[in-house]
Length: 398
Image 1 (cartoon, rainbow, N blue to C red):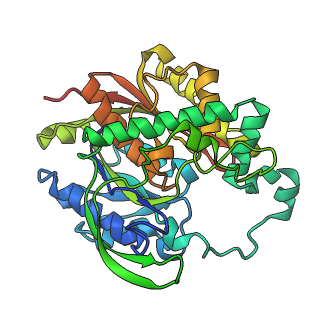
Image 2 (image 1 turned 180 degrees about the vertical axis):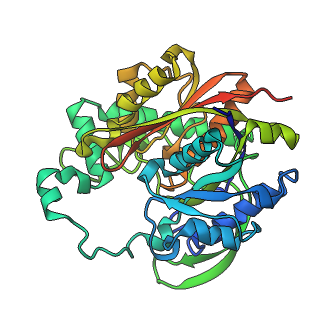
């Protein structure tokens, strides 16, 4: 089997949904923008060798509906021969597409594929088609599959005794780590600036106006966060007895990420210096009403298939859907904080559902190289009751 490598991975900055710089930007436009940027910064890669785009999207309808991956391919500077397929595994969609691209390359059926993901919550949420949305039989036998993600986070907190204090403490750590990483410029190489039109709305008068905006960084971080401030927030999903708040949950945000996957032989032929090898991917189902614990099952399965132990892993990128599930997974598996989400995660950075996995791949690949580590795992819980995990091995810079 051939080696598949991550050559490069780029993304937009993440903007707050509804209130941020992408609140009028189509998902296909933002993704085509970064596909073109990916090609421009890798001039050795002739666009004609890109055979396909696999694009994840957690809610693929409306302006991010159709087959958005194919639409992006046609909008971009790729030739018409480049295909496109849209994939939905909710919050792991971006990791899923990178894994699909890599396994296609490993099999020998392709040399170069772009994986990635996108989510425009601003333009879709609240405008979705709910006609015949619920299967009554499924709702009766497994109602958790239709639960709001925050409701499942509350279930995890209550079932596994994850305290409000531990959730807030973890969330504060995420905010502080992200702020430090931003100050140090650790996300700069990932982010492609994009000029946009943003709609501003006056909360008091309702007056609206359109302004020019540049999204060139992640705009969700709250560096001024304190434990006292977090403790003052009311629970959202269970106001009387809950612990999940806006402060210890991932932030709704808009953004896109794409990752260039290639055979190692092709990368060498083109004189490229890839970031990492793809070494494996796995997914495991769990009870839908506690979907947040999915990585507890996916991580051991991945390690076993790769012949590795937890101690072999230098960095962990565990998606911060909610602090309750991160704290539980961390403590259950014994993941060390000095290796876990070292530059923060979705609580501070933002979480456009379909793109986060690809963003995590790009970030862990760079951070492994910066720290001269070897192995990194990207993992997340998945709506509907699943856990996903991908393994990457760093390639030292030449």
